[in-house]
Length: 89
Figure 1: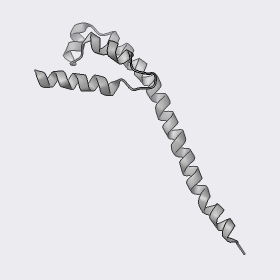
Figure 2 (figure 1 turned 180 degrees about the vertical axis):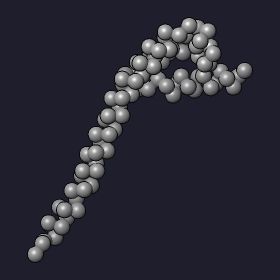
Figure 3 (figure 1 turned 45 degrees about the vertical axis):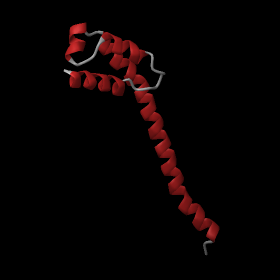
Figure 4 (figure 1 turned 90 degrees about the vertical axis):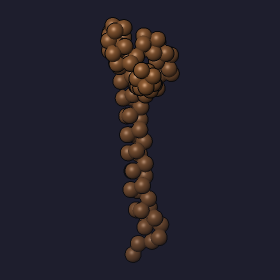
């Protein structure tokens, strides 16, 4: 015969596993952003000013993106600036 305590423990295990899996997934996503951000900036920094202008960015946008805290993804900021310049033209 099972007790109420055994039933509660069995029901709680899956939610604990799910929370642990979500925490691990979130951590992995943050690590990926930390790695991806500098790679993006390195690729953009290798472009000429004319190439940057073709995609709607200026060299100053790259300098501003490098001032962001570690772990922040610079892509949304750069994308917003690019779209802003495209709307002005």
